[in-house]
Length: 180
Image (spheres, rainbow, N blue to C red):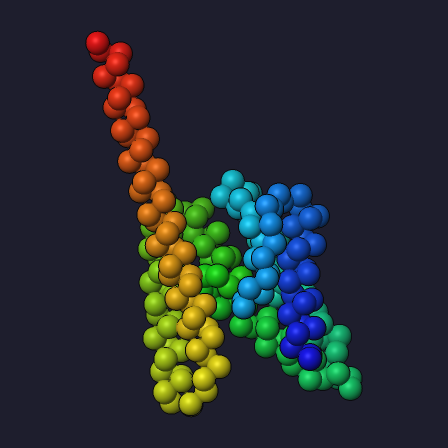
């Protein structure tokens, strides 16, 4: 029960920050991994992305310190666990989205997507080793999340390639019409 309340607080913080930042989202989906705000983040300023992605882990961090030395210490522990897990730099976790947003400042989108695929792959291998050594199968959930992130990044790369090719073809066709 404590984990569900901590998850609800985490996702509510994301939702409230999106509303306060006036981030337009088309729909909210509840998935195995929490809420998914279907929003256009591509044209969003870096600071707004950072606030949006940090709001969930930050509320969990605050709740940890509020409840750590009380009878709700188990709830506090669930919150710090969620905070730490969500800051792992794999997409679709908050840490991965923060990492991706920072990289977008310095690199082109194709390089960012490739980097995130490599990062997710690295963590999948790490989680598999942890599962093998400690027999802690909870890490399978993180592997599934990392695989989902790899699929999303591959889709992102494919969409960019298709858009670029389409733009080149359209530009080429316009040029031919002008020369006739």
